[in-house]
Length: 238
Length: 238
DNA sequence: GTTTAAATTTGACATAGATCAAGTTTGAAC
DNA sequence: GTTCAAACTTGATCTATGTCAAATTTAAAC
View 1: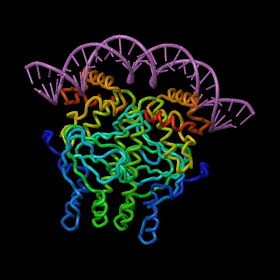
View 2: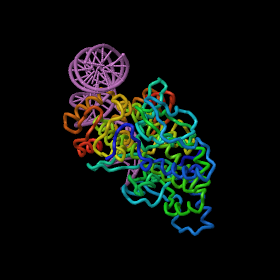
View 3: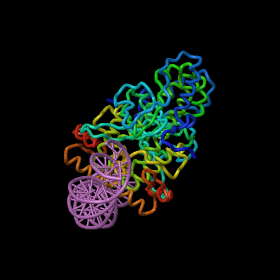
View 4: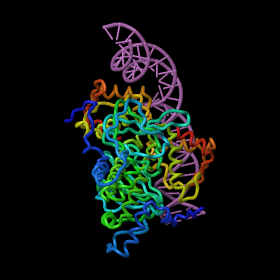
């Protein structure tokens, strides 16, 4: 079980960008890479913005600690949270296709990221086939993760099953980092969860209360423990 | 505007697999590829199953005509539709990571697919760098499409906005094939749409009726025409 | 520690969607 | 064409979630 102190980082070995980042580091010795090709563990404070919706793509990020929310503005100036990223996960890689970020990425709490220049990665890819192959694996893995993520929420409407699916999803995604598959230090507030799930924060609060009353979960401050994983999975499956 | 006769296929030029499929065809002349490396336009009847959930990955498919639904069974034996695929789109590529399909792919109506052997594609990729590069672009495009798809539905709960988002989504995805960005020949029945969106078919029916009464759409048999795209976009955005 | 604003919970009522039931329409098989 | 089952629509009621308001808890700033 790893230390969960907030100053701790995900290990490079557990980072999804490692397969691209490592060969670049090795290549640095033989190829003339500019200094900006890779920045490791850039510290960011709460509400720090990595990039804005519709900025041109320049870098791909991997979360090394903390959490980021991905937001979109709608016409009427409301902010919709359309995704969350946890340590070891990528941010911005879906812009490789359109060359433009299509959401704003904002730090929740003190966090940190590693950053790889797309330009450098691409030109190195021509020289080092290993990078290409790794990039393919990285992208197919990402494709799978997205599919799972989509499946988790599509077709669900009841507040109970949405929250159950959400808890399972974030606990699973953080398991390798936290070392637990039944608990999590909730990095995001009720309002943001409600926004993401399309519920009202009052409704979400009631479901949290009900889950506690029914002995499905235990909440202590920001920490959530699943008391009956089976029942939660059943709820999420509905 | 293209002919929309159901026997027509999406052009290879408009198929997302083309960037991988074409180089393989070219390579066939110089490399010793087995006969099974590529099957073009396999005809499938209604309810034909391409592969089952948890089958090991062997091939990646691209829809050349018709429509496929992606389904998952839950514990209580109900079938959940977790995605649709239209001409030019891929099926099964997200299994590249886990090596196992994680849903069942079923034809809706008479359809057809092209099929590429993953084994052959991978071994050819070592010899022909072009295939690797094209695969990367294919996967990042897919990543983007999935993200858009996710965004379209996450956080939406009202039946109105779900249906509006659904109509826009499928019309957009079929536009290059049908030649229209305001109408579509609906390939899927109300029950399946309701299942996918997590609504009851009665509710969906009521929303369809309301949209027609409010002059937002026109329905003639299976054909749907958007009368006020602006209003539908506004509904979907909420 | 105290103060204070923000986050969360709870209550009362309104409303959208689910459920159950009964039509009506559509289209395939004959 | 006719028949029939499946798909779709509509109506009446019930329930879950939204809405608005107020109370309570939490945690940040001092």
